[in-house]
Image (spheres, rainbow, N blue to C red):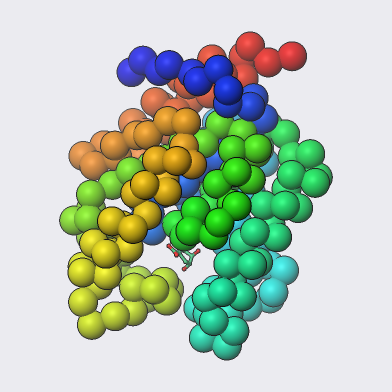
Length: 186
Ligand code: S3P
């Protein structure tokens, strides 16, 4: 794989965005291990802070409250001058106005893109995603994905099509970029 690194991307962290089920958490974990960087997962941070599952936060407080929590996590990471971390984010983080700018301040943003069929297959086995607990999850994925694609495009410096690739192949590709990216860093 060959990558063009955008000159404007800050050399701070590797930030993963993308739809539910695109592999952000799993790929984030492996990247963090290989680079020996701490992993920050915005969903995990919120669950730790709240001592509740995300599905409980949605059920008790509603989505807008969860979205505010996501923004607060991004602001905290920036305020803490987080550096050389892998940051994995919830799939809807790009939907809050202002978050795209915060994501880009945090570093090099990689969009793990996946087709609706792939997302459906990867998400169908568990029930921990409140937004997909609908009568027709495939249609829900399609609708949300259509709404969000322009936002992922705006948020990311690099898009990787993950369909048909296994996680190791994706991680290897990102590492190639990351080594180059952070290798030139002072
Ligand atoms: C959401 C994605 C979830 C989680 C929450 C909302 C979304 O994270 O933040 O359920 O709006 O797409 P994952 O993308 O890690 O599943």
